[in-house]
Image 1 (cartoon, rainbow, N blue to C red):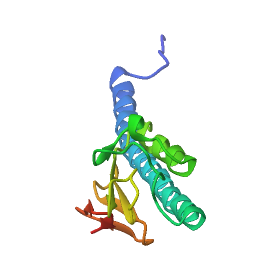
Image 2: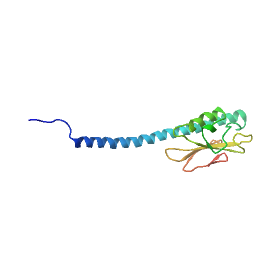
Image 3: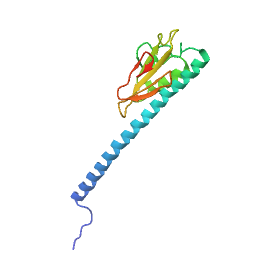
Image 4: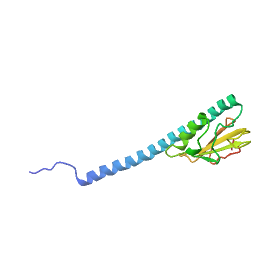
Length: 154
């Protein structure tokens, strides 16, 4: 009597299919958690800009030269020049993978000019597509479609 041992091809296909379904479920959840983690880091970087700007203002009584090169609303790595308190978190956002371009506007004057009386910085989150904005008044605001204009989050 010749008895064969092992699995049939159908049994193997069923096992592989079950593993594929479970892997797909895990991949979707892991991607979501990765994006939430990136968003948390981005929020932290914006909060660092807020805290660092308060220290800069307390020392200098002005926001002038807190940032020196943001001349367009969207800041990318090349625009992250100025005080180290702005530069380091700005670069962390602009060079992240994926990048978080910052909408950065000032009130009263250009961001690098005398007379800048306030500022706001806003990013679009990756996990929810909401915007997250902080400004020089201490506002931290997450909205479905927020604004950052004339140095104020809205």
